[in-house]
Image (cartoon, rainbow, N blue to C red):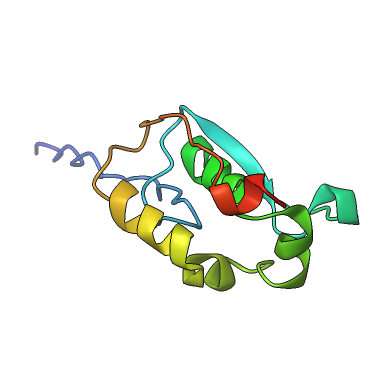
Length: 109
């Protein structure tokens, strides 16, 4: 009798990590780490995030604003400037990066 050879089992694809700000796949290039509570205020927990998303957060908000009002992902996504950015960057590939300008509101404080 012939022994039937076992069919190779398909392994499910590994769960891809997503950016907690924009929701796009993180990929493996242009990745930073963000502290929801800024390090300057003793924040310890870090999260992987696209570099462009990280730059946008810090170009739009001060460390104190991050501490007082925007220390959750939902709060960050609710900020008008960041919401517009997320809508724009959603169409870009995971490794996309472009310089982020500091907002005028933040420059003149």
